[in-house]
Image (tube, rainbow, N blue to C red; front, side, top):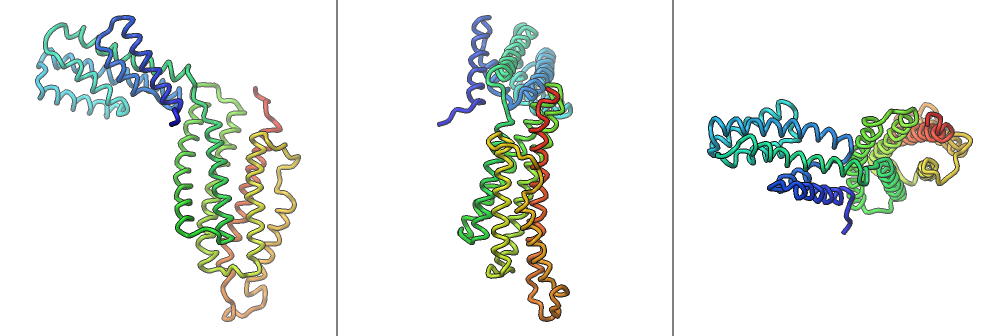
Length: 355
């Protein structure tokens, strides 16, 4: 079983909160432990934002709890009404992410109807603050989240899966059921990639000075993701046209196969270049052999058009209609890869200019 950084940080934050309560003899430490457990966030920025929201929400909960207990008592009906009121106020102030701890504070404050209400509320509020601060401190200092490598790894992994699916599709090597299952897995990968991109954007823009280099990286990663979306579009188009309408025995089929394999390999090499495994090329344009094969594919496709090959419309087999979206996707895929290659080339050749 793998223990991730977030699980580890949650445990450390819990330990820290309990230790602070022990050092200062604060009772009961349960509330600090609950607050620490619920307050670990994926980024430092979200931790600080969560900290502010928790302070606001818990102050609202503590204040309403004390006021209601002092004037109305702590009967179950009163507690229920106060809880509903706290929920409505938190939702109105867009503090819904802090609702749980706010409600815990309300219930903790109103659990007794005797004694010093202010002291009791202050104690519960302090315990919650200790838990939230413990989580913020651990998240900021212990194994700070680094999403750049996670994002790149996920993009590379998804690109490899696309390469395999595309190759098996054009060679008709995979069972249809297995193919569709693998395609669904890739779709779920897109959600992970978009989430990681959002977290990475927060990581480099919210808590530090935005440099020219960081801006270039954001654009570069966005283009990496755009290429993946283009591959998904291409996969759908090929699945729709290659075997349902387009005969694999057609003389253009081997050219399409070889060109797709060359482009997916080119995509892999671009990612390896960004990662520093391959040397940066002197030229970011499409390799000459790929460019020539693109031109050849386009030329051969145009010869299928009835008016070009002087074939009467009624005698045309209509294959060019199904080839058109296939060829268009290949050419657009090549254009997207060339743009990505340009961004990677620019990033490496101008790296460190604003460091």
